[in-house]
Structures are given as structure tokens and as C-alpha cells.
Amino acid sequence: MKIGVVSNSKICIPLLSYLSSIKAGVMLYFGKSVNADISVNELAGLCRMNNIQFHAEDETKELYNWQQLNEPDIIFITGYGHKIAVKDLSGVPKGIYNIHFGRLPHYRGPSPVFWQLKNGEAQIGLTMHQLTDKLDCGAVVWEQNIRNEEYHTYNYINQAFSQLQVNGVAQLLTKLNNKQTPHFKAQNETDARYYNKPQLADVMINWDTMDAKGVLDLIKACTSWNNGAGTLINGYELKILDAEAASSEANNIPGTITIANNKFTVACINKQALSINFFNINNTCIPARHAGFYGLKTGQTFISKI
Image (cartoon, rainbow, N blue to C red; front, side, top):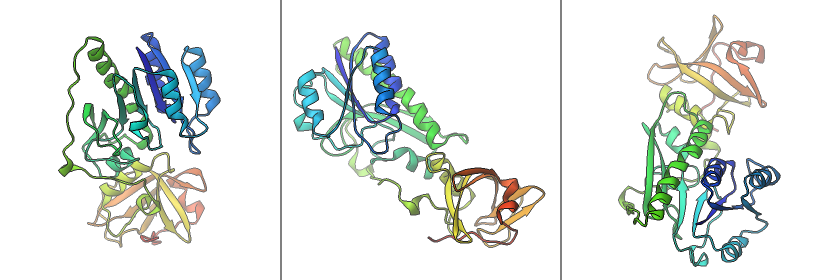
């Protein structure tokens, strides 16, 4: 079976390694992206070492020529940032599947890991579905949820899902090789919700409305791709990378700083408080116990609105 993988991210590497290990005829179409997390040369070298056919995109329309020229029996899309016209990918006998790092239909859109973490979901979902012209709407063929743990961050979940997607692909290929029909589950449109790519306001802490857990969830969702959750003070931005719920109550205005005994705490709503462990200023990670050296003082208050 000839297997095509379409991606513009390093999250495709575990899948490529698996497919190469089972001696499948693998070909990678690597999409062009200004925000690519791996260079063309790095991925081309990996493919060369594993005998994987490699094509680097210059223009998105090349995808359709690549498919017609190479005629893969099945295509998996994982981490490809461009909309695909499914009707122009004709003649893929075993189907085209998108691997979406979010629960469907609840988390459609380009950044499902961010939104699942920010919303504090108890379970974080990974879904493989048929590719259709309507974004993230095709029938689901495989899905898996993992428990949202305290130590989970945006980067951690993406790394974990890049490994877990292999399970879904392996199960589907096994069924197809055994001439079994995969089970397709239509998505319930009444549960569907679409989330856009996070904007500046989405990654900023609002101390007036967010309780301690809400701030912690946002920190997880922003670490480390955004260097933490943002907040403003003294005219500059500070990003919180790591924090935990403080044991004592806070009676100050939400966003108020207290620095004492090498502890940096911030008041939240509902008399809650956070103990800040690490923050980032000017792309420099700083232990919060050194906050005083950066001009932060007890009684100062973070700004909630940008």
C-alpha cells in the first residue's frame, strides 16, 4: 500500500517513523509555512535516511499534482495549515483522513489543544476523521481522550498526540489490510463549536474575571509556545510560565502583588491567590523569587484590560 502523509509540522515525525518501520511505501508532502517548527532540510534528511519519498511545497496547488503523480492509496493529513479542496484530490481509493488534535465536533478549528487546555477540559481529545470540504466536519473513524493532568501544557499535549496518532493510523491500516470496513461515526452538528486561532486577548489574563484555576488553565495553554500567559504592569508585558494555587486567602483587589519571604503571590477573584514560580520578561525566564530585582513591589496591581 502506498501511503501519503501531508504535513507542515514536526508532529508528523512519529507517524513517518512508524510507517517506515512497517515497510509501507511512504511519501511525505511537506507544506510551506512561515511558522514551520522544523526546517525543510531537517525533514528531508530524516526522510532520506528512512527511504521516504519527500516533496517540499512551493505553492499550495502543488498538492493536487503531487497526488495525481504519485497516486497514494491513502492519505493522512497531520498538522497541515492550508485548506484542501477535496474534490481536486481524486482517485485516492482508501480515503483521505485528517488527524485533528481536538475532540470533535466540540473543538473544531486550527488550535484545538490551546482551547481545550484554556477551557479546563477534564479530557483532552484527539480525533481522526474523513477529510471533507467543510473544515473538521467529516465522519470520525478513530478517537482517543486523555486525562488533563496538572503537568500538561500546550507543548506536552502536542508531543503526546504526535505519538498517539500512530495508534489510530495503525488500527485503520490493520482494518483495511484485513479487508474490514472501518466504522464511521457522523458528527453531531448540534454539539459543534468552532474556535479561531488565539488572538492577543485570548492569551492575556483578566484578573477581574478569572479565578485561580482559570489563570492556571491559561498558563498551561500558553506554555511554552507563547512563553506563558500574558499580563500587563508598569507599561510592559510580563508572561507567567508556572504557578500554583496559594494556600492562604487573598483579600486584596484581584491582580494585586504580594512579595514576601521569597514568595511572589497575586490575588485572584473569590479571595483566591496564586503563587507564581516563574515568569518571562523580554524572552528571559526568571524565577519569581527575584521579582523585586525587576521593579515589582508589594501593592502593585496587574492591569486586566489591554
